Length: 568
Ligand SMILES: Nc1nc2c(ncn2[C@@H]2O[C@H](COP(=O)(O)OP(=O)(O)OP(=O)(O)O)[C@@H](O)[C@H]2O)c(=O)[nH]1
Ligand SMILES: [Mg+2]
Image 1 (cartoon, helix red, strand yellow):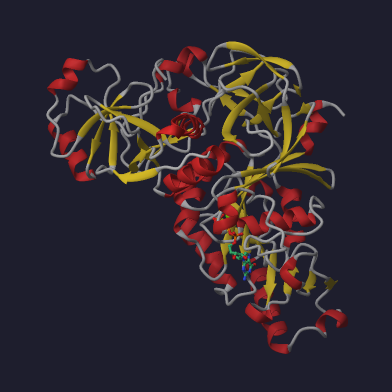
Image 2: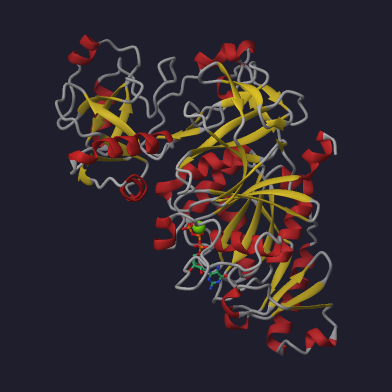
């Protein structure tokens, strides 16, 4: 197979939504229907039950929530799928947003009883900004759900995206029987299986098929037919171009836990989802000019190359790197350590953007500007890994053995290519982390350093302070719990958290001199500190205090993220 054929085979996508909508459950069922697992696990697995493939972390199994994104690569039909399950909780959203840089489309899961929830809305906005096509799965139709027409209306009203129902629910709640496939005009009626471990038995037939009709009561049948007629009258047709442009989303109904509608989603998705898309490369010469300005709390700063492109600044404009570009190029979007207790190493998750990856190849590493050999490469399936010798655009592979790799780094055979895809978040939670056991100092420090490299948390250092305890900063407080749990379970180091009095951090201009910092007059309770790159920051007790400082010190601009410098 040549490279073009390989590219055409790839589908790389993420499952996203508000917490608890059923992403991990759906992921597991896509694996079941995709033939990648024989028996589906459950997120709330009890004794003797299998846990899901994507929630492999100790703490995830314990809590029944996803904490970290997971990559699952498998073959189905003629496709090679790279599926990424993401955590829904906003405290872990940095991970989810990074994943969105690595995919070409998403499946947005909606709890049909709840409709569009806040976190789904935020993720949707990021997909829209990035131009990522969105497919929608209306999950949990086996529970009393909102009226399907009003769910479509919600998509249009709340998200401002056109909604095209590819299939339609037949009944709901306890009477949810299946879905009508509007493309083939066939009814798919399912039977539940215990725990949804196996594929649900299905009977398929047209609306007039007596075998199918006989399984439905009159009310359910008539309601479905009526609704379908209404949809037909609206006369909309499936518009691939609108889907790819992010103007319309194909909508599938079903129940992930009961396996209803999963096969139709998988096949429908593959039929319409786009293959690997290229990425913009920042011009190396234009690097220093990407100056993120203060954007306020909760704002995400994406270092995409286009941010620095303005008319008349040709040198800083991005170059589009198509997947067919002969040069191999890829970027690191995630780092995770200790995935396999037997190995205790760290994996850099890499999205291939162009060219062909070959094991043992030598590439340019953007951060160190050095040549590195990529010899330990893996295909990933949850926490399982297998050596991979070749990979193509769209693939996500795991590279082991390079401690110098950081999130956002570019790996390429053409040093002119530089991706700046990774968004960054402003921390909003701050806490001291104490090491209560001095004998475990080494483990404590090693673990903390590793978790910082993963981008889970960052450390700040108070200026003119004798306190040796690290001040940690994270997007949300749940990250601290994860850090504590992982320090203990992966490094054997217990820790104690102590709340810090700040809630807002703002970066000062990086070139401020020490005497200029001395001269600043800070509001009550605010403190000066440095980030890991030695860039100065101010910690404020609240937003009001930060705003007050901003207004009274107009010559000292504050920014919600560090301005990129050579120091980083
Ligand atoms: N009734 C019903 N429950 C479901 C369905 N799908 C998932 N669930 C349940 O919803 C809960 C959350 O499911 P998960 O798959 O963990 O949800 P998630 O979106 O991955 O959650 P986070 O990753 O923590 O954001 C679990 O208890 C599932 O068993 C469904 O189709 N019907
Ligand atoms: Mg999950």
